[in-house]
Image 1 (cartoon, rainbow, N blue to C red):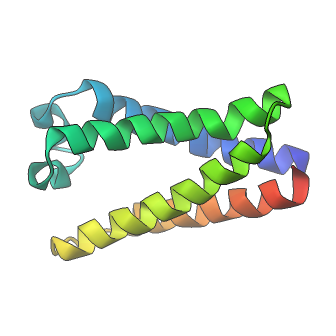
Image 2 (image 1 turned 90 degrees about the horizontal axis):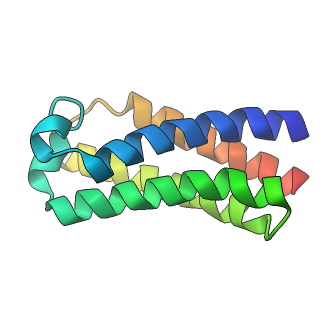
Image 3 (image 1 turned 135 degrees about the vertical axis):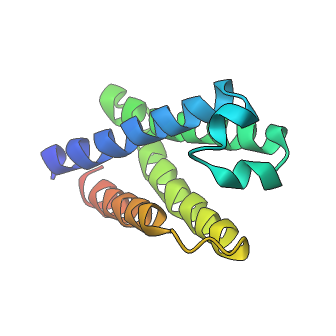
Length: 120
């Protein structure tokens, strides 16, 4: 379980570090080709989501790695499940039916939750 957690959590953390980092530093125009939903959101909200994603990615890795408050990794994984359900809701409310990535991220985060509860 230890190896499985690190593989799944590591991949999830890499994704969210990349996606969250882009939301934090790029302009609306730079984000628009990949994330059309940014047009319907204030940039402060987009940036806040990016910060949450980066902090969650750190939360998946750092606590279990250091042994300090490893339960935070479980909280981060649960947070990503909740975040993606919110993302799916935003996509569907805008008439965007392309939610395969979001569903994949929900599944990956749910597996991370399961691995964290059995290992940590």
